[in-house]
Length: 147
Ligand code: RB5
Image (cartoon, rainbow, N blue to C red; front, side):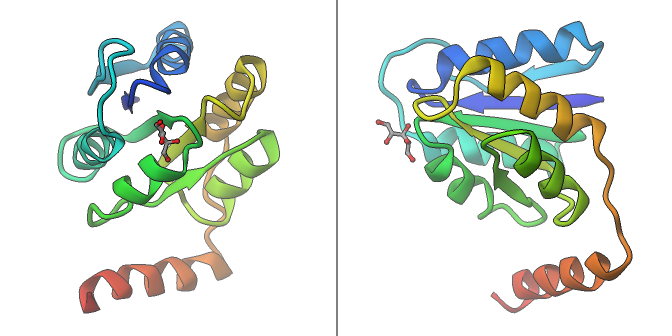
């Protein structure tokens, strides 16, 4: 898969770790920045990842900021993005299975590297359960149309 990654300064180091894992697994990585730990604004990078996933050719995205929250809010403003903050293997798996999340967001100040790597693996390895969840995802899509 082609996977877009992006972070602010707080998430930079973890983004690099997660991008390395993606490359090890054989995925193509589209690095949307940031490129170092100089302060930047997380909405810029959430938007870049969101646009890469929805219309830019990437199959999925990975975002990192201090908490994962701000960058997920920003990414979710892009039509078609379903960004989920994931804290562990269970939240990562359920974000895919129930919510068909296409962007995984991590909080570098809240989650250790090993937990984040395990969660990333789970996110990539889990498919959407569809079934009853399809109706709910369709309702999310309609919210975007009405907005
Ligand atoms: C940056 O200091 C911090 O606010 C940001 O990384 C993130 O945690 C926001 O949600």
